[in-house]
Image (cartoon, rainbow, N blue to C red):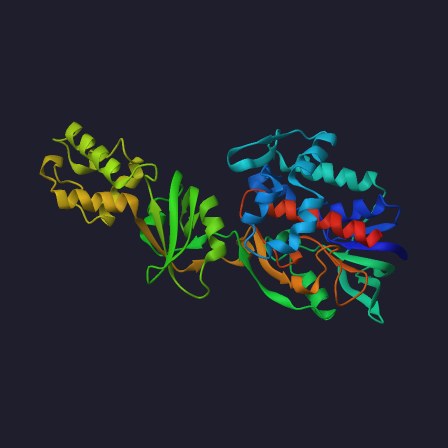
Length: 408
């Protein structure tokens, strides 16, 4: 335990790939992790299913990375999503592709993915130690060791793969930012990325647990300026909104400002088509109350909230509805609005935005431009992507690139 060629700090996917890659190049490698099991956070991703990567062509990845995509060219082209799928197949973990190109293990068990990576680390000859890294030591502008709660370890290179600050119970407590800052790096303020939104609108609590699929969502500021839009799936929660489209839109939320989410409940229909559909339903249920005439158009639990937003009397008989009232219903179906007041805490984010400024890291090697033989991989860097497996792929790819170059 006294001396290694390379010490990797952090046993997540970036750290595991970095350690195994360097070891397979003939270097003695120590992988330090706070936890008694590698890949602890990986084991709970995707609600325990693990969205491993995305089946999209690598060129399409960059459209799904809002923060510093160009920095990742070398990493993502060096180890692609298809490379990851092939790797897991070789490890005995067959994969399947679902909606949006999301790739999952056939078993739907994140543990299978984490165990495959952990086994790969051990088979590669990496020494794994449960210990807390307290500091990174360097001398004359070059790495010389790592200080842990179990003593100092001498080494020639260090790879920081400590993750961000989301899910702190898994060990992501921002240690890597501290190490990097002490080494002279700029830290872009950490923030939650892929994080649910908060709202005081009572409709969220009323619809708690309801999932809307195949809807279009537009986010605007309070002045009506469109910020971003997404298509997909949304979930109402007691605190506000979550689900894939909301997590993706969270990357565009204005800082310290309220904003509005507009949900198009029928995006496949134009206004004219939807109006014709409403008229058909009204003809079919002409003698019923309005609240009972929308049962084929909306989920039952959404009928009252939609009518409330449209300021319509739910007990009014359909054959007495005016054209103006019908137009109000139509508008609300295409623009169901929820005012939001911000994002949930960073601890609830799927990934952390911000981190080590990428201008101070060589994108071809992941080596620090401040300290020789100091490398970074994964979420500790100021890169983040939309939901869909892109963030995990960034972890693998940057980990491998860091491991290769630290070994060289």
